Length: 202
Image 1 (cartoon, helix red, strand yellow):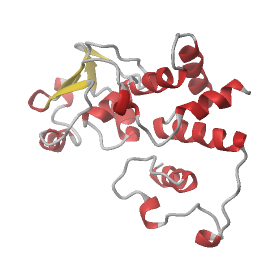
Image 2 (cartoon, rainbow, N blue to C red):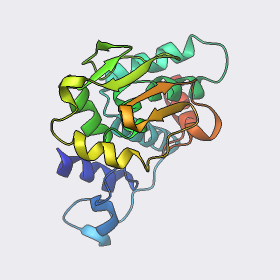
Image 3 (cartoon, one colour):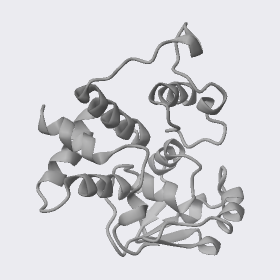
C-alpha cells in the first residue's frame, strides 16, 4: 500500500502520502524503466486539469465516483465551487483525524477509523467518509487508548499544532471542530479551480 502510494507521489511530482520518508524525496522523478532520463510529457489544458483531479483523489484516498459526488454537492452551493469542494474533503472524518495528529498519514487515519478507534460526540463512528460538522468532538475510544500506537500518539500530540478550524486536547486524546476551514487552511498541493474546469468540460 505504501509502496504504491509513493509511486503515485513520484508520478504526480508532489508528496501525497504524508510520510517523512516519502520515496519522492529520494527519487524525485516519475516511476518507470527510464528513471530520471525520461522526458516529461507536455500536457494539454485538459491533461493539466486531469492531473490536478488525480492529485486530489490520491491525496485523500478517494475513488472517482465518490469524488464526483463531492463535486456535484459543491456545485449545488452558491459561491466558489473549488472552495466548497476542498471543504467537503477536509471535513471527512479520516482527514480530521489526520489533521488532529492522531495519525501520521491519511491512509493510517482511514485504517484507524475503520477499526473503530474513534467516537464522534461520544458515539462510535467507523466510516472514514463520515462528514463531520462544526461543534462535533472527535475522541479516541476508551477501549482503544492503550492499544496499538496510541500511547506514543499521546506524547506526540503535546507538540502537535492544529489548523485554526480545530482545537486539540492532547491529555484527553480528543479534538473539536470549531468551524469550516478557510483561507490558508485550504491551501493544498492541487489547484481546485482546475478541477472545477475539468468537470465543467466533461
